[in-house]
Length: 110
Image (cartoon, rainbow, N blue to C red):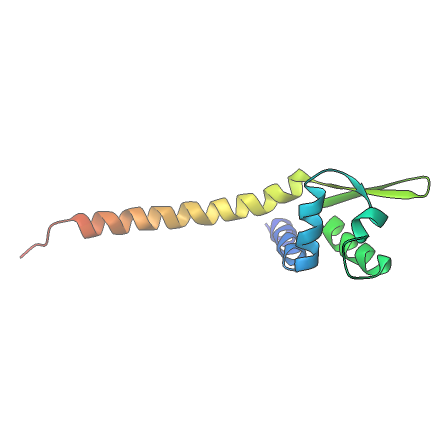
């Protein structure tokens, strides 16, 4: 349970930053080199690498170095951690709303 909570915390921490969300969005289009990924971002290559390290630790991104080129790709299983957490909460609230609807639909007893 603690390991799962830590994993969820890392994912949401990583996605909490707009630059990292932009990186994830760009990687959704397909693998790309770090240098090409950094071009549209208004920051140094070192700063982009730091953001990628956070995304990699969270399990959202995987990087691989071949020769002098480091390529990044999205890691779908990392997104499924967030998806599952959200789905679990949605399920709880849908049940609560269903019950509230049932209570409101009951005729008043006088």
